[in-house]
Length: 121
Image (cartoon, rainbow, N blue to C red):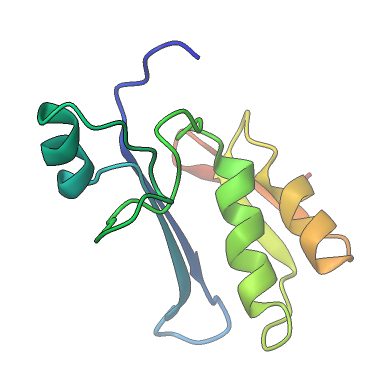
């Protein structure tokens, strides 16, 4: 896999039914592990996030950090029993709603954010 400049991805789900627009779920994909870096500097072979010790990474260094659909699917799986997800707002080229639909087993509308305006599909 080619080098990716990012090492952390954050996905946030907010509700839209109240004035507060409360955050209901967050997923943080993290490739960073200081313990592994120290061990590698000592010549040890370390694979994150499954090495013995205190690993702070929760995804492998080779995982694509820009896979927004994967992270959205992870969040929607965690909350689908407690929350009804009807829509997903993303970039105009994003397909995160398809991953959310797959995980919740129901159709999720895609609201495209395009230059500050929102367009229904």
